[in-house]
Image (cartoon, rainbow, N blue to C red):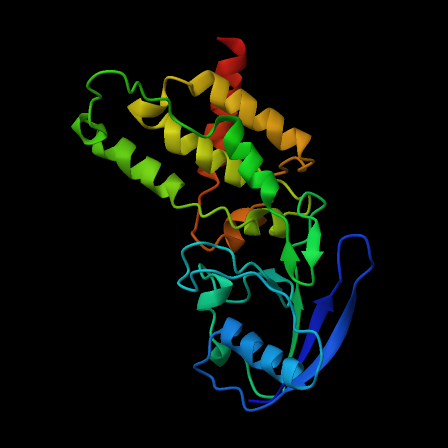
Length: 247
């Protein structure tokens, strides 16, 4: 496959970036998208040019670090798939592919396609934890009986990998789906009920401090989420927040 890549290049957050064109040849259809970028970077290094910076870690669709906007879609055209699990057979020889970082003022660009998603870490640190009494003999978590419907719902929320695709897809750069998933995960389990009220208030307040926008229920977050996190989590977040403020 021969491709024209239009890639966002930006030295750092203080300087302006721009789209640059790169022609690449002999790409195998079975390559992953990141392997294709590896080939490009090797080509750039061999030519004495600066390689394209992009985030990646597990390359198994688990961690979400490989977050890119590909032809306008977070993680690319394949539904329920992270960038690292997207394969080049989804494209045709001669295609032009636009590759950009996740766009949000709360995700400042570090370099090229790499953004700082530390805002998500700070939101979780504000309340996304469970206190456990470690003095004496602690009760094993598995010893606490949990109704299967509650366990299933919590597990589905916990599937969120915090990649930020929901923010990149949202016209308001809202983080409600991410925060909703983290709040729902604990709200459905008995271990998470100790900090239930404080958790949702602290996480929502931190989300607002980070500058994320409001949710207007367009559903783009759910449509582009690689783990199919449901909009029901936003409803759960609103319920938990109202209960904590009123009761």
